[in-house]
Length: 453
Ligand SMILES: C[S@@+](CC[C@H](N)C(=O)[O-])C[C@H]1O[C@@H](n2cnc3c(N)ncnc32)[C@H](O)[C@@H]1O
Image (tube, rainbow, N blue to C red; front, top):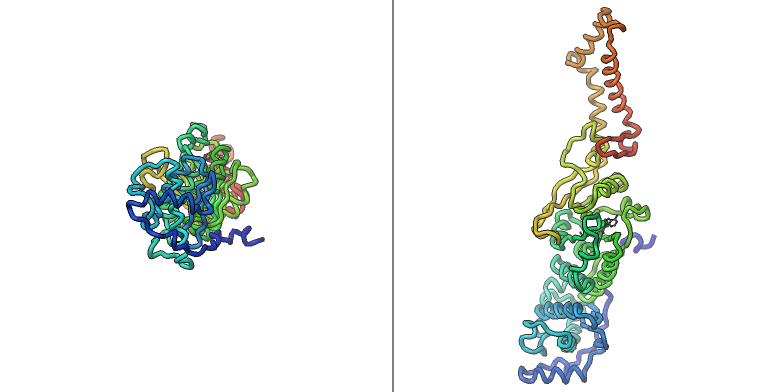
């Protein structure tokens, strides 16, 4: 298995070769001459990047690569403007040649293109001045190679905005009142889950029903999981996810940030081709199942959850397991008998479809739970023999005596008694026969015999 197949390879930005400083370009324009110098410079000293129909932004981040985006879309211009505001907010003199009040207005595409050209002139020598260091002193969080929560959120949001021009359209593509109903988990909520569960580079994160894939990218950036994978059934959001993934990669490279490996797949997560990933590889599974049908919930439980590895964690918006800790005879086939479920911290505005708080749940697979239950049951069965004088033993002795005294003849045994006793015996048989397999009427779940041995 290659290093990449094993998911051990971390994706990091490749090194950019910096061009030498051109002092003429960084000459400071006076306020009055600013606008004039803008035009002259943009026509005569075009950086190689500003090709026709392309917006290019040079990177001021260590190991950062130029950002090249199609310059034909309004929404892309808006994202580039937001990046300019962000970066010039960190290092104000990058905006030296910008017109006064540039950041207060809503510029048109032409103006944004001009700003990128001006920015690039300063950015190039500026970045090469500190080549070889991350410059956290100047850039703060943005100067680090690892994404902080804030940086991961910001970059993922840029990627989202590049990939999804009109988020409102997503509602029209999705089928309402079905398992494919649209809804997103907000990045802040996802960050809270990552922190609470301590998700990190040792984890394989899988989002079952990943929509446009923003959580997969965010997890790759913030938690730097060994692998983050999204599986989405509907073609349109799955296409957005691929697009979002492409922008995310480019943006991470631009900001000089490393991230974990990630993949977006289109398909049904119940398809056997995903089973190995889900059953054998995943350590954290995310399912925003708030709108999933009971039938889909049932299939997820029976076709996926019950086969998960011990310790696998499943985050959901509708709990699979109950809070009950104790297993009873009737619940031995429930998912609860091989897992524990608890509530997670849920934020206000944690999801896109309501301002109300939606609860998030954590189910952790615990295969020792059922084994412990059967061991306790076995002990209970052994115990009465040594419990001389207990009610159960006394009752049994009384019955034996009665039989011996001939008071309880065969003929006296009413048919109802016989069947009642018979039933009781059958029930006991069922418990002891549980060593082979258990089927419960409550969920219909059938668990493999490995849990009962
Ligand atoms: C509410 S969205 C959640 C999107 C994303 N996980 C989030 O929380 O932001 C649920 C997604 O599950 C998808 N879905 C439903 N059934 C599915 C299946 N069997 N296989 C893959 N995706 C499915 C829907 O199409 C929908 O995009």
